[in-house]
Length: 326
Image 1: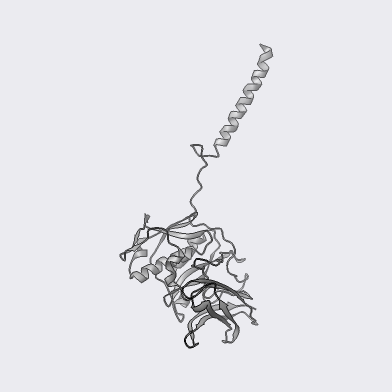
Image 2 (image 1 turned 60 degrees about the vertical axis):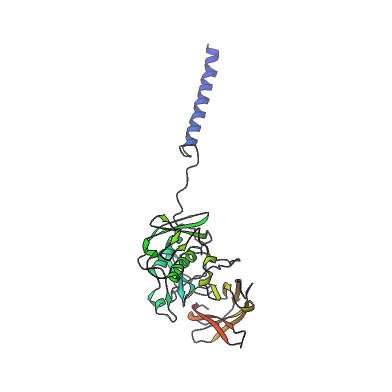
């Protein structure tokens, strides 16, 4: 008996150790033996680098702005949000200038939940300076709209808003506010489409205007709200790097237009003839770099315009206030 007792005790010890290891391993999985699901994204997007931001300690431009991604079939690269040395995160909201969308830069406290932060800023509407600009910046999002939830997974952002979001306004206002939310969320590389909920309920028909939302919304659904030359970067009131990179979309005759940069005195610093990748009935992308010289940080203007095919006159002018740096 003693000859077999020692090996049997060893076998029992080995079996006991194996059972313990299996028990420890089960603690890392769900109760049914599957990996426990991760918590919802809740609008958290890891920030990485967007439009150039001013170094720490530099005063912010007088107008808060941002930049936008391209909505055509061939989108340009969208600048991503970044945490600046001062601990602020740069995001964009989308407002209106004379009925067309414009990206406007906002600076928020450093956060990984930049999707939520951007929507919160959007629902605040234009600042006093933006509302008093000429032309004025406006919003179609009703006052009192509350962000109830934001989940992001596999490129889909599901945004839950209070019922105030569908109150007041006609069809143009209703489509406009949808466009503002879609553009604001799809500035981030992890979001390419947006689904809407109101008070927790999925939206299939939006507002009393009967707008059918039979699936997630994408940028191309709202191309009618874009100007003919849509500047993606820089944003309205943003700070330009030096040299300045300007990107966006255009749908103009023969894909041809101009970009001009002026200093605080209105002196032209650069003027570039731009060719988009497509034009005359289709959206094409553009990406140009403008070198310029200024002696000090100052408010300047970035102007896009077209020349009339009929008489060569300047038309479709749009001006963006920007901050220039040496």
